Image (spheres, rainbow, N blue to C red):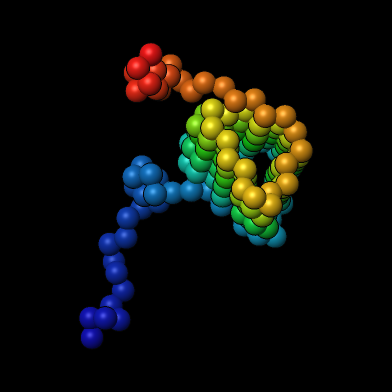
Length: 139
């Protein structure tokens, strides 16, 4: 029967990455020490000790933990972060999240029940987005 036939033509990992379908996962039970940088989304379910700097989104899962500075396009925290968090677009601290460190981003969301200890610095987004916002407000 054709239902049980193996699929022979699978896309390569490189092709999937080029299509934007890939992400990097630090799995639960894993420990990474040092700097993490890259172009793809980073999902942390384990523990990272060191700097995280990616050109995409960073998501810290409920069991995830980062001790060190975090920088990404967007940062979503459902786990624990001890260190400064910077985002180009948005930082979101979910209700189960814990952040001990300063935040720097144009948009910040803190869910009810989240723990946050630090200073918030809201800054303007990139120049092109500022222009649109002024145009929308009539300024």
